[in-house]
Length: 448
Image (tube, rainbow, N blue to C red; front, side):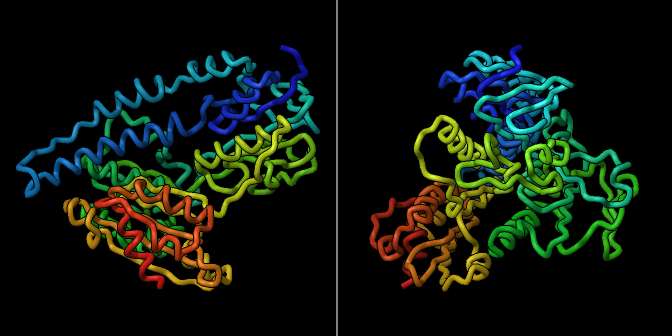
C-alpha cells in the first residue's frame, strides 16, 4: 500500500464511511482506517438492530390493544425470531465484510487497525506512517460511558452492545440511565416480559426533553409495568445488586449501563496537530475544519451522538475537501427522536433552553387525544405537540411532537424552525386532515 494518499479517514463509522466513499467516488485516493466494524455503532449495535427490536415490541403492544377495538387476541412473546433477524438480516453476525467490500468497490483502500495522528496530514497505524496530500478526516465516534461507581467494573454488566447481541432474555433487568438508549431498551424488553427497573440520577427521565415528555414517558412505562426511580444515584454495585443513595436496593439478573457516550480522544494524538488531547470533543468550524488539512465529523465534534448528524456533517466536509460551495453547519433546527412508544421527537430549543438564551418565549400545547387523529387512533394515543416561539421575531425556535405518529409531524416542525417560518404564516396553512398535523394548527392558534 502506498504511504501517500489524497485523504485519510480515521474512523469508518457512519460518518467516516460516507466521507471516504464519496471522496473515492470523486476520484481521490482514500485510505479508510477502522479498528472495529465499518459502519460503526448504527448498523451493528445502534439504530438498525435496535429499531428491529422496537418494531417487534411495538407489534406485541398493538396486539394487546386489539381488545375493545377490533375483537380479541392473545399475544405470546418470542425473542428467538428477533434475535435471529438481528443476527442474519441486520449484522451478518457482526461481520462487516459487506461494508468493507462496498468501500473498496468504490475505489477506497481499507486498513484494519488503530490509527493515531502523527503530525499535520499524517496518521500512524501499527508503526507505519501514512501521509495525506489534502488532509485527514477524524470520525472516531464514541463508546458507552461507564460511570465510576464502586463495584461496577467487577460486575458482568451490559452496555447497548450486549443488549443488542442477546440471544435469550433475562427474567429481570435494571437499566442504569433514563436517556434515549435506556428508555428505548427498557420499554422494548418489558414488552417481551422482562421485569424492568429504570434508575435515573436526575429528577426526571429524558432530562434533555421537555418536562411534559418526561412525565408522559414515565406514566406510560409505569403503566406497562416498568419500575422507575428518578432522583436516585447509584452508590455501589455488589454482584447484580444496585445500592441507591436513599437506601433502596435493586437486584436483577442483568444490569444494563446506559449513562451516555464518550470519546477516546486522549489516544488520538491530537497534541501532534496542536489540539488539546484532554478535550471532550474536537472543535470544528462551520465547514468541519479542525485545523489546516484536518476535518472532524460525527460524535467526536460534540454536537450530538446522532447518525443523522454525522451524515449531515459528512456532507459539509466532503464539499469543503472537494472545493465545492455550500452553506456552513447550522444546528438551530437539529432534530432528535427517542423511539419509545409514544415516540418523542423534538427539534431546536426546549422552553428552558430558549429562556436561558434570553428569548422572549411563548409556548403552546395540544394533547394528542384532543386532536382528530388521537380520537380516531384511540388505543395507544398518548402524546402531545408543544411549540416554543420567539415572540419578538414571530418564529418557532423549538418544537416537540410526542405520539404514535410523532415522526409524521416532526419533519414539518423541523422545516418551520430551520426556515424561520413566521408563526402568523403557520396560522394560515392548510393542514392535512385527519392527521396529527391539525394539532399544530390548534397549538399555533394558542400563540395569538
